[in-house]
Length: 373
Image (tube, rainbow, N blue to C red; front, side):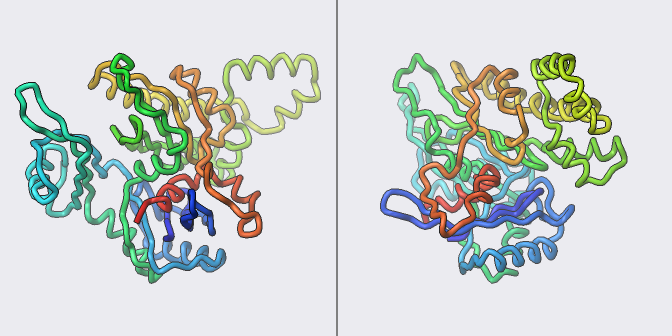
């Protein structure tokens, strides 16, 4: 089945097929998202998005009658809740009564889903169960479905980005510890994109918490654009070329410049380089502060929470030094994970150089395509 990921920076498409012991990448493609047509998970210009997607699918020779998509954004509610033990039919009805406690918008205009995670028994013997509740406005889903129907693609599954990220990086997740003294050992999947940063907390293979931060790489680019009155694309190139400069890197650069005046003049060839580097650093650390709030919030809700590793993905994962900066700020091991791990790729079928360049931004689409139908 074809998986499509609608991002603010680019629209990605991936086709995987099942093999005897895993998956094979059949085809993939991506195209730059038309300006201002997708923001924070919402499609603002369905016609422009449809045209861009159709052109990319034709160019890549990607054909499928069915598709799978994922929704994201602050309007998507994902909560692990505890309810009395119910069967599947009772849960479908009962969740309508539970949902208003957690969903801040009109349920009549929303889509709800609930899945039983595990059964448990309270001290007094009452049988309960943990349930994963997912809610989203119908409009958020219908936007993407409308684009697929323009392509004559039947939407078969609507998932959430956090689930897709879990499947994409399943080979990197820490197994659940059977020793209760170890507490809750969590992995953090951090997808740093153009308009949003997705935080997904996972214990073993279970989604525990997710949050969408409405800040990403484009916010930094716009700051540079506005500060120096230059075009957005020019600001984006400057951001990528300069990258995130860490304190120790700055010290090394200064020492090198003292020894080699030629290299110093080359470093200064970019106008306002230090000012731009400072803007990039401020923007990145603003995102880090929001991540810290989420990790601290979850930790205060539960006892003995330990964050094992940060699995980093998304377009901003390619920024120089960002993994090192994350490790310094949070004291957690950072893994630059490869969503293609364990997936068979034929060099005769795909452009390997192109694939290696963009693999980090394909993680959501790969995770969607891995979903069992």
